[in-house]
Amino acid sequence: MQLKFKAMVLSCIDPRFQPLVFNFLKKKKLIGKYSAFTIAGSSVGVTHKKFKRWHQTFFDNLAVSISLHNIEKLIIINHRDCGAAKIVSINKEFDEQNETKIHLNSFFKLQKIINRKFPKLKTDYYLLSLNKKIKKFNISLNAG
Ligand SMILES: [Zn+2]
Image (cartoon, rainbow, N blue to C red; front, side, top):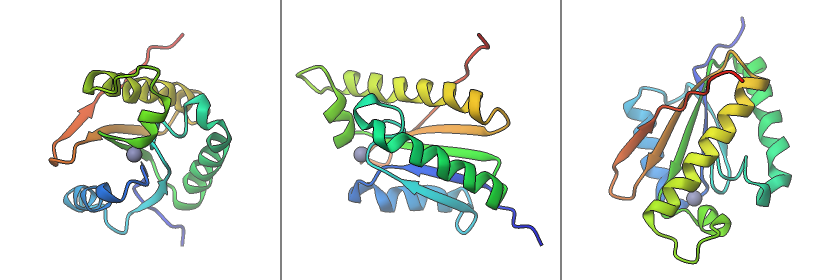
């Protein structure tokens, strides 16, 4: 029998957000149905040049999960006040606006790579806050 699961979840290592991520996925009825890749910065970690050595490992794991678990979606969960976003911030002041830009840039960068490497894979992008607010982003890229 071939295994069939729903998604891979890409999220950050930050201890404060583990229960939030879990509860979010529980609400979505995804417990037991997703593979997990947890790395500092989530999509920032797998796309920013400062973390270049991490990128291939993520995409290799994603490829394995697609073939092994038959997932059809990658769920990306980034979060505010992220240490990895702070590391890559070129602005001295790390404010909410700067941070949003860093997360959004990584979303677009990741989607570009997904379009090229895994064109059939669906994606959902989220940004969590410690106050449990969850913002969903629609990242669509036109061809070309
Ligand atoms: Zn983080």
